[in-house]
Image 1 (cartoon, one colour):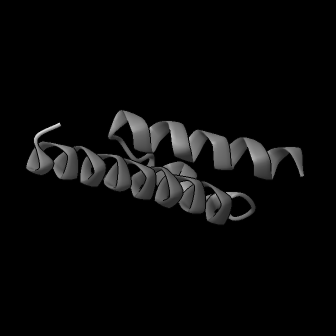
Image 2: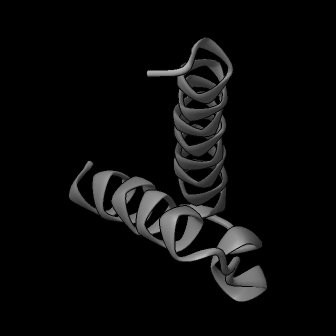
Amino acid sequence: MDDALLAYATGREDAFAGRRDPERAEHPHTGADYRIGFLDGRIEIFKMLASVREMLERGY
């Protein structure tokens, strides 16, 4: 379980940094957790940028 959580957290960190580690993504035991963490991080960035765009359009 700890390995899965670490892989997920590493995936999120990599997403925020804008880099993806193909070796970690393909790891047989924790690759899926890494990929989900990466995807969650990218979705969070997308939502943040969408919020910024909305604020700029509204003139805040």
